[in-house]
Length: 147
Image (cartoon, rainbow, N blue to C red):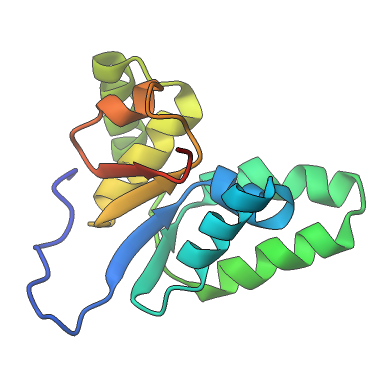
């Protein structure tokens, strides 16, 4: 099911963007240029956001454990804007494993790629450098905010 939804051809449709945890971290506490690029993506009215429970798992536990209320609120506000949530099921996990083996991905990156592809996202935006394995995938266009 990695083909996702049919391609959207209507010019009024927003760009469906899967945001990985690094983008939210960069927006909140990244270096200034990186933070600005992350905020520009998050504030882009031409985007609708896609995510998964895996992104929540990457962000929320530490914010809660360290009682960082500002960080937690920032993440929660973002999650409220997400309009497309990946269904976590065995098929998605199988697809992630296969893509991890094909591209040499780490577990969480593979889950993000599979989740984004399953949602028919137009792109996955990350802070991962272009030399990292996530950029090898052909299931989804991966864009990095790092220069």
